[in-house]
Image 1: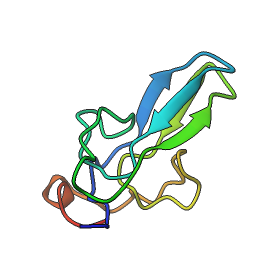
Image 2: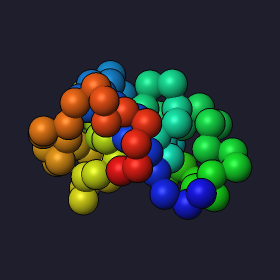
Image 3: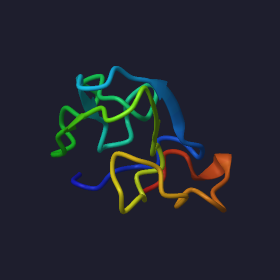
Length: 87
């Protein structure tokens, strides 16, 4: 499996520390759908490192954004039934 799943249908609003390094979940399996928690093991996918540019970050959980790790609004139209399906 090398394709992400939809981890959520709304973006995650996280309090981040400017200049701190984080790891964005690219697989969709993490508990919060936004930050890596190691759930990608066995998926063939790896987390994406990024450095916070602001104190509040709105992150993609649907894995459809073209602006990863940030939300681009690509989740519009998704429903609860889409969670867990291929992104």
